[in-house]
Figure 1 (cartoon, rainbow, N blue to C red):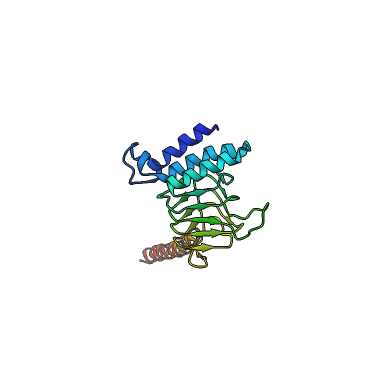
Figure 2 (figure 1 turned 90 degrees about the vertical axis):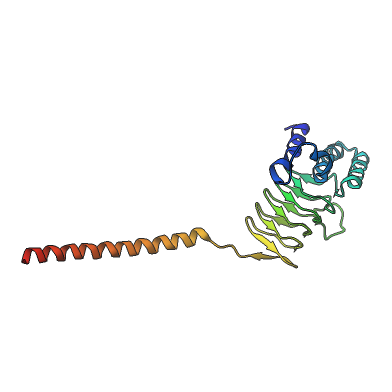
Length: 212
């Protein structure tokens, strides 16, 4: 997929993901997060072509205009949406996969000063990161996980889990399928017993008729 097709997807995200979106005109004045991602696309393109100084200039101008500090070497997938945007920091070795939603004040930061290593988190597909959350270090946030507002995450979070608090802890999932299976098994057992009782009553009625 070429660069401009990806940017077209970026521009479509407010209409899809923000219920407050009303018109295309708002895209130019009310969605700095979209512009931060679009500016990043160009900066990242030049960074990969080894025009690193130009890429850093573009990202610096973008930070001034949008309030988002997004390093041009970071890796962003498709349909990444930064809502409200202000104060978002995304570090150099961050990897963000497709369909990730990030709210204002989020930091995807490092915990090491060593050069040449991966210092920042990997955010897998479909993750939602609440406002003010800090995700720090070379950790992985699994697919479709949710990070609560103002959480401080320093350890991996598994797929489909929710992490909240300082330091972040996993909120236990309710295993609905298992519970449902247990209820189904109980119902089947009771139904079987009920059917046996009905059969016994029918036999008793037949005996009574026969004796009468």
